[in-house]
Length: 118
Image (cartoon, rainbow, N blue to C red):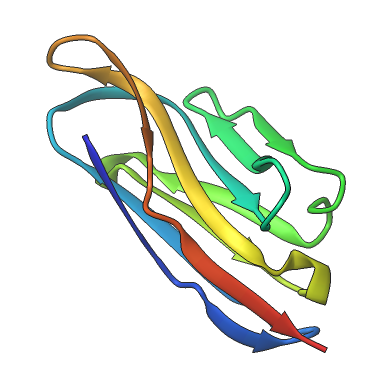
């Protein structure tokens, strides 16, 4: 299973970005799709996730500003980020957990840089 991310970039504080992550390959089913972020010297942290049953989880810092959504037909997950702050600057990684044609998988995207200027 491969994940391809897109949508990162440079934006001013208060602006918006939408990240996309598409899973391809021998995907049989997907359970959890999520977004994490990491800054140099810190651990990767969960930003938001969504299960196939529609349960969503958000980091406190993301609540009210970020929205996660998924298109099951396209095996794609999105992260709409509004009211961005400089502290949101990080590399954002997509994570997908599911079942392929052989076993369970836990895949990561290559990461996309989000930079928010003040």
